[in-house]
Length: 71
View 1 (cartoon, one colour):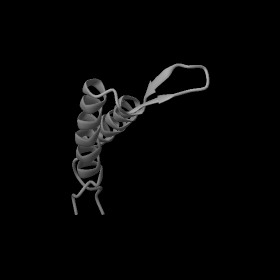
View 2: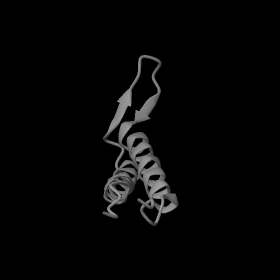
View 3: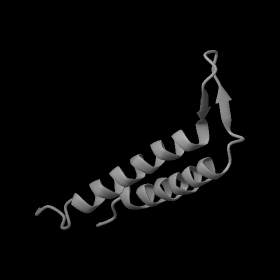
View 4: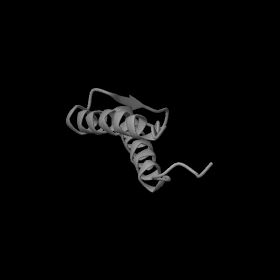
C-alpha cells in the first residue's frame, strides 16, 4: 500500500495553522497578560506552531519513498 499518513496530517495541521495564525493577527482578544505585563497572543503563537508542524509533515511526506521496497 502506498498510503503515507503524513499527507493528511500535514494538510490538516497546515490548514488549522493558517486559520489560527490569521485569526491571531486580526483579533487581539486572545491575548494573555503575564505577571510582567507583556501581552502574549496565544492564537498567533499556536497558529505558527501548528503551521510549522504541518509544513514539516508535508515536507517529510514529499521526501518519503515513492515506491515500496522490493520484497
